[in-house]
Image (tube, one colour):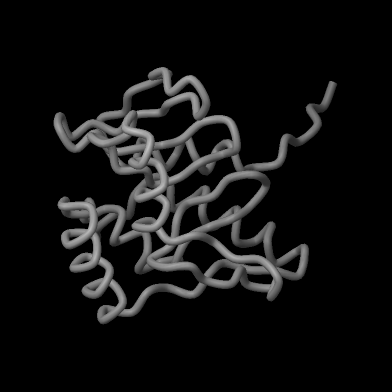
Length: 161
């Protein structure tokens, strides 16, 4: 039996929470959408998207919950919120790379204060402060960085004394 990524548990918990509030997870990307996205990223960003990120999109095409955004394959409406959307990963990277500080990074997610990236030069996932663009933390795997991102989207539950 194969085991999925450890962030999958957090993703399932988040989907249950979304449903409680009349929303739900984003629908998954189709194989055609993934193929178009990969080609678009190579053409515009001159890099391949990580296979694990594409696997994430096969489960849920982006995420926007409790201040955390994982960019989608393209700009897509948020389930349950027709007036809001999740930005596409390529368009967000064009914006981040315009300033020059993120030219060697592939931005995958943000939480309003930090951005979560893949450093295309060294293959490590990194968390940067969004404004001064200072490195905060490094992660070895996509699973590690996604676990960090999804943990930030979980509501803080009161502790029992």
